[in-house]
Image 1 (cartoon, rainbow, N blue to C red):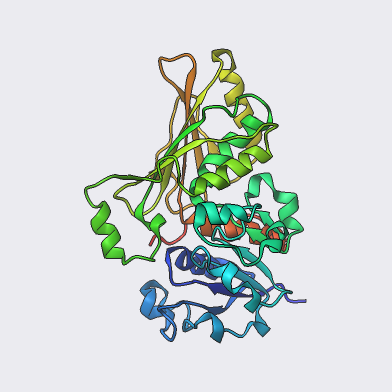
Image 2: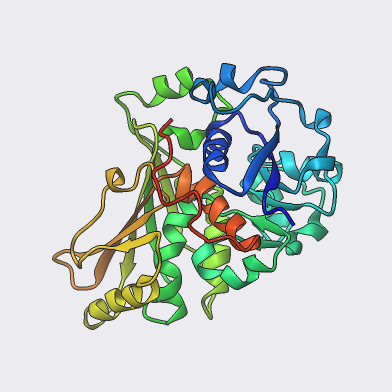
Amino acid sequence: MSNIMNISILGASGYVGSEMIHLCLKHPNIKIESLSGNETAGLNVSKVIPGLRDSLDLSFKSLDQINFSNTDFIFSCLPHAELQSNFSKLPNNIKLIDLSADFRLKDSQDYNKWYGFTHKHPKKLNEFIYGLTEFNREKIKAANYIANPGCYPTSILMPLIPLLKNKIISGDNIIIDSKSGYSGAGKSKKTENIFAEVNENIKSYGIGDHRHTAEINQELSNFSDDLVNVFFSANLIPVNRGILSNIYINFDVNKQNKIYECLEDTFAKEEFVTLLPINEVPSTREVIGSNKLSIGVKRGYKDDLLCIVAVIDNLLKGAAGQAIQNFNLMNGFDEGTALTNNANIL
């Protein structure tokens, strides 16, 4: 039996889709079969992503034009709401990883509240495993459908889950302030308009009501004995890519070492997670172009307040890279395949 899998990438012309193509081309067990793109349908991939001119000779198609008969696996990089709207068009025997929010939330009513649409396939929500790789490996290995985590939530959940799970911190009064490069806004708006908005400017948005809050609360509550409700805000900063999350927690000063030791024990053997020495904090430059998450723990002059700083590349560990990690687990490949070398920087 061949170990080469034919892959279809939906929504392949966006920032995440482009990164997905690059990673698939590096993967020895992947052959890209088809690419979908709404506005790019009919165009050769080299016209849309010039860096792929000598690497891939395929044209984008609309979703309705794709014949999935030769497809073994689907990566969906479609914008929010599009996959759930078109899910019935896909064969039901093909494994799939969704990189949008469409199947991350388990309560269908949350989509009305946080995303402004009525979910068309609410019964499918429980068939999707939340793909936070380092915490859900065994479930991911057995899954047919994966809901890949959001970029902001990945940077936030990774350091907080072990601390809540082990009851080292309380879920009360967790405040998170995150910064993202403009590629996190996607290509739904023209790139030049996004750049004009953030150039020489920093903009806060979703203060206390960002839609990723639902995902963060859901997953933190799943690993805690109590309902967790964080206060989360996001900021758009004038860089292309990268996320930095400052996570502020109230804590008992006597537990500072326990916090660090818990993170150290949790991530000691994780290939893609780095914990810096205590009181050192990471910057995005350390992780851009990689599937790495880097964590720092810092306490200032206040004995009851501590900051955890987490950084990722939003297009890799926050999206396409984590999707490849999950793909590898689902198909019995080494988890780091196609991820151990730096990706092409957009």
